[in-house]
Length: 320
Ligand SMILES: O=C(O)CCC(=O)C(=O)O
Image (cartoon, rainbow, N blue to C red; front, side, top):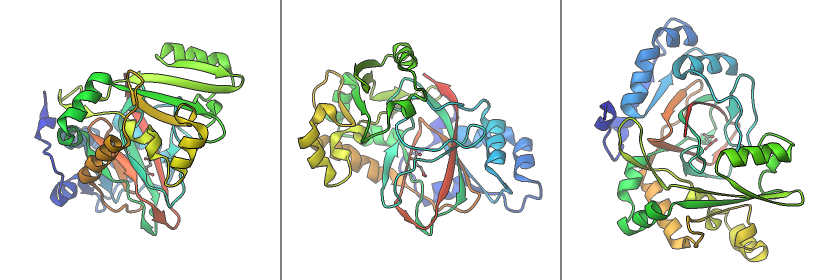
């Protein structure tokens, strides 16, 4: 156990303000400041679960990349088994998920559907949206604590089975696995506990993962899965019902079941989404803000927005 135990539930405005570090009066470049304060910045993230560095002088995504590597060490270099469209920039930096601006991205811990995930994430606001477009956060311990116990227990006992069908609707397998070789896909799946089935050029994968994890430093339980994001009922608006009836639950681009393959009720997903909603808080992005995140303690998402918005992301400290 360590200092993270001091983070309390129900994050309020004062807690958020306390984690926004205004560095605009610093005379050095952003990179020089970070190089001189690596321990302090890591301590902020360790103590508080996230930190916003505001007002640093950063001029490029390359500088952001170096800043992130200076703080967190070796970055994730190739984002394999991804679940959303994003563009790779230089030096291990990616755009955040490129969904249409009118779409909300539900809260999630990055890669919580996988057996490998980054412990640390860094977001960099190049251009804030005209309106909306925050990256809301929620405490995964709070989500775990606030779920109805019977539902939580069922998930905890069963785990989650993620079923993905790659192709026309969702990302093609070549993009998800970052290769055009079926053999390489199979090698990745075999090494990572993913079952796979080819139907000519179409691929279906299944992976069973726990729904709850223990934070390696604090020992606290966190709700750590993406059942609500993968579940058929989460497909956008009216298309949900149409796709479920026309394609069938098994062939949807993505879906989530209990670990034994049985269905998760729509109402239970709604309950989970409500608990996330109640735990979610946000701060408005300023140009050049850097958000540093413990990906197991806090989920992130995205509000809908207007205007041109550009937020980049890098990941590090891969575990699993
Ligand atoms: O654009 C953002 O702020 C976050 C998007 C997101 O959830 C992601 O890329 O995983």
